[in-house]
Length: 403
Image 1 (spheres, rainbow, N blue to C red):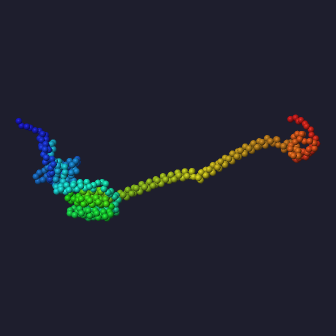
Image 2: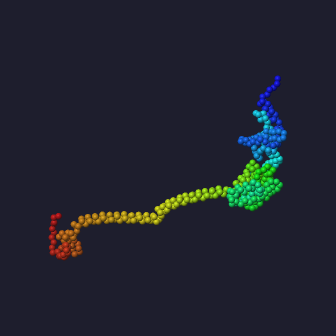
Image 3: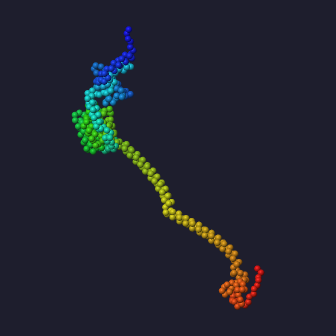
């Protein structure tokens, strides 16, 4: 009797065969890229082909760090990874973990080795990074004198700041002697006293960019006293210079924008600050004016002159009050005196004299009110209405008058 298997059993069996094959677990395959598609999920789907066949490949988003360039159809690459069966579809494909351009594998290995060595030495450490000045007057550029990179840097820099002075060191950026030329350019511009240096070039293959992966270039950047912006290649290109520099720009154009502040924006900001400053000053002056007025009122109220004036006014008021009180008191005493005068008018001796009475006194002026005070022969003075009569006592008698 023959044995019948399901599709899933067969696919699983084949998958186990691939898993058990040690060679297929880590293999390097070279070929030409075709049907390359970057999925929105981050995965990359492509095929490797040569004159003998085609191999389906996929690089998952989590493995993208193993890709140092943007892959496209027609690239000749070396793909490292594992060959396995996709059990559901029953087809095998290569799961890529690293991809390098064919012929660049050895250079890439040198790149990784130098990167690890310099990183271990601390040349990439953040504490050694210099801040990029915000406002610069002199910009140094180390790049090829022709090409898009220098034109982009020049156009963008001068558009953002027309008063900027750009000093270009025309360096070799590719081929024999390029690294020495770049090092010389960095050192010369550092001695020239520029504010910031841009070191870079346009994009290219790892071979084209290799001068910026040389150790001598990395050390020149690290030892430079002037802040350096690295702008090598396109956004996906990374070189040793990018890691050592004080700031990495994805493109030369971006480096110009990072190095040169937009003067129009600066002037607008300054104008805004000026308006804000003037407004704040007006408000502050008005506030201080109000406070000054308050202080003047308090000073006017508390000043010695004011207090003396108040005391003087109080004294005047007290004087008026005292005068009125005295007048009232005098009026009262005058009234009482009038009453007393009226009362004593009837008791006045003159009034009695006018009524026909007289006043008898001895020669010493003592009034005589009793016969016992005189004796015959004493002289007396009798005061009447119109004068004094001098008389001598001849005799006296005692009488008892009815009261």
